[in-house]
Length: 270
Image (cartoon, rainbow, N blue to C red; front, top):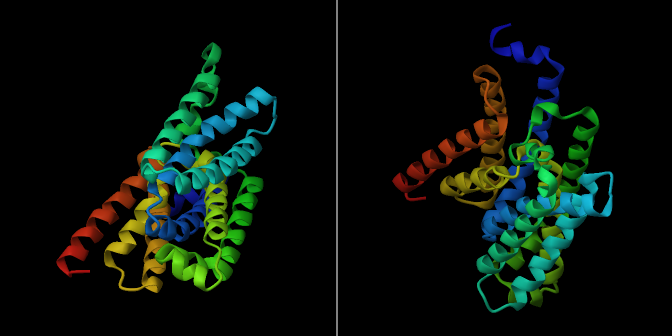
């Protein structure tokens, strides 16, 4: 079967389906994350996964996915509130919260030398995904599409000018909190398969690459989703033949695309 030999394995087919869901989802969300300069925010959310697991362990919650999601939502809303009220720069506030969050999570999970049980979440393992977990990703993807259809223009207006958005009866706080919750759910739903260490790169790189060469919002979304899916599918295939972790392979390709589009954009004054 040559190049398509990997399709004969169930785990590779499931991983392929997951990539086809995760990458366009990240490509879409990433455009607004990059637009709103939320790279630190999404990175902090990824780090908060460890604390979410730790909270679940302390409270005796059997399903750590649930504790991760709940903690991430609370964490995202708290970051939004504090960032809007504290005089310090937003990236400083987020960095402080991120550092504190990951330290607490590591301290709790490493007690008694048990951190090895959770170390896999740092890199992720998309090859272990199950059909049931793929369905949960489909649900998040559907919710994101609905949000984009009904709320994108309002969120964009808030991003461009909060005062103007307010004059059109758009609640900036409501839109920002909705997007923060959606980002938190997206990150938490994907983190076991992508990994804490690289999930932010997968969220940011395709959108940043698209912005390098796009002249309007339609191109921006199209290229972001395209670059995300291309690096995801090709990264999965390369990881199979080269026998390396899938997540890092995807991010390396996404990074190569970013540098290529950066040079292209500079050359053509985009």
